[in-house]
Length: 240
Image (cartoon, rainbow, N blue to C red; front, side, top):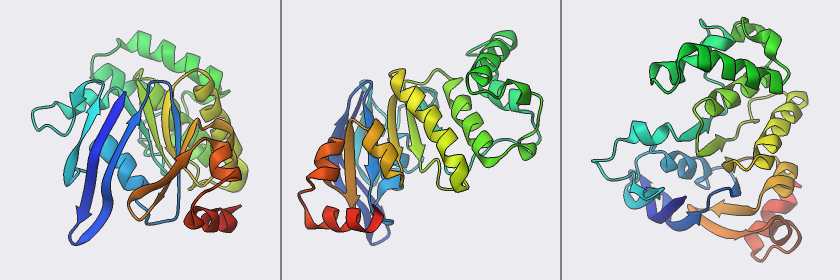
């Protein structure tokens, strides 16, 4: 689904991503772990061009999105993105937040969008919040709304940038539960997270990023039970 070739990102003299080449397959659950400053979020944000790579290419379903001729907004409709901060429109109700993009982009008529929104809200147990405003919701509720806002666009892949890091600890579980459900449904997911239990349980492949490179990768058992590099061993010792 996504082919990354020699992806490099520099901020001035600082190299944040250092020649990464990787393939992400349809239906795969990729979890990215590693120390702060290792390039995790920058890598994720390059996948839908929220950050423009300095060099290299990213091919999504056969289209080179780094080509200046590519309509990136059209591509982004297929790539959901969930951030640390929920970015809901505070002056719009939950229902309006969910239906705004698909209706504006003429993907759905308003009646169809509202029907889908109610169905998704019901699925996460928040149907009664449809007419509420974001400020009246807990952080965990807002993040779950942000995730289903992404699903409203029928994306091919969802990118998660530390989706639980801004939440109180007791709210983390409800967001991770929704993400597990999406994984079980077969959604292609690329997730940067500090939640090692989630990484072990959901990931098919884990990328350990350090120094702008994917320093080590493997399935959860390989990464957590048989790490090869001293750097990964040191990281796991600090976080587990």
